[in-house]
Amino acid sequence: MSKLKTAVAVAALVGGVSVGAHADHHGGEQGIVRHALPDSDFPISLAVEIPANKTVVHLSGQVPAVINEDAEAGSLEAYGTMEEQTVSVLQAIEKNLESLGLSMGDVYRMQVFLVAQDGKVDFSGFMDGYTQFFGTEEQPNLPVRSAVEVAALAFPGWLIEIEVSAVRP
Image (cartoon, rainbow, N blue to C red; front, top):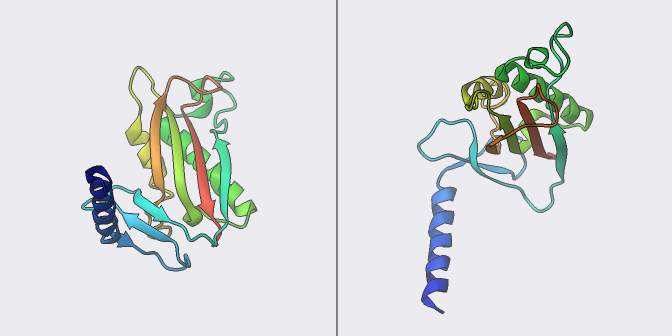
């Protein structure tokens, strides 16, 4: 075996042992393993393992609803702050999941697109909305997550779009 192949194999084994040491199992998930971030209380998972016999459901990206009908169409005032938009989007995701017989606790993967205002993403506002749905006492399951800044979304007042994938229990 070449030195490179040996190094990759050893790294994979060590990484697997390290990740496995931080497994954080939540009851009722029938074989799904969520690995906590080591030495962190940040509310996302390091990794999520899904058994081959499970059905995975991918939801299309969700965007915020208008919260102020009196505001100019397409304006930021029509859709609210980053926190308000995050809550609106997660409520829509929750409703869509429920229509499919799923819940927020079944979400294992999340991709978040955030628009910066004045050159800076309001990540704190996003997290304030996100933590109302994930990592709570009522719903402790944490997805793996990516959050990226984008130049714009399809509608001017939108600051956030979220895609999720869930696993059927």
